[in-house]
Each structure stands twice: as C-alpha cells, then as structure tokens.
Length: 114
Figure 1: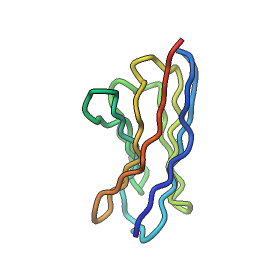
Figure 2: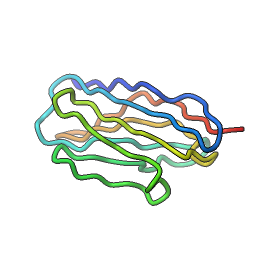
Figure 3: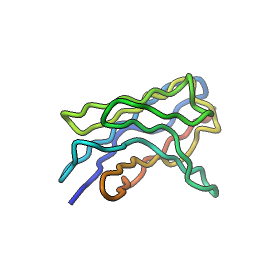
Figure 4: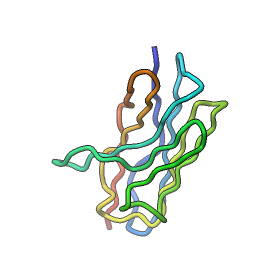
C-alpha cells in the first residue's frame, strides 16, 4: 500500500516563500514520476511541478523561475520550494506519485494574502 505524507504549506504575504515536502512509503518502484498539483477554490486541479526518478523536471509556466522541485530518491521524498509567492498561488496543493498506478496526497493549503 502506497501512502503519501505531505508537510509544509500555510499562510504567507505576497512575495514570501514557503516549502512543501512529500514522503512516499510502501512499494515504490525505482522508476517513478512525483510532484505537485494544486486546486484553487472553485477551479480545476492543475499541474505545478513534476520530477522523475531520473531527475527530469517539468513546471507549469505560471511557476517557472519562482518554484523549484527537487527529490531524494533514497528517501522517496520530493520537495517544492516556492518563492515570490503571489495571491494567485493560493490553492490546496496535492502531492502526486505515478508508478504502475497514480496516488494522491491528502492536500495541504497554501494561502498567499496581505
């Protein structure tokens, strides 16, 4: 059974920084895709950033240059450093893991407001 445990998030003023982490446990294959999606209130879930077990990354255009995703294969953990946060970054952020199947974390709230 695969489980994703998220930590981080919270509230910050515009221009501030936050970090998220997601640790996967269970039967994790050596080859995987892991990262973050977000869902603003009343809107659809959208990709934020993904990283493969081989180190390749993919970012949404809206976060390029501000967010950085990184991973630790030994710990099956991914991190998302979010800088220069904007009010439009406010959303519930979900950790995502794809191996043979897809798995989601429970979500963590990120609020950017003055």
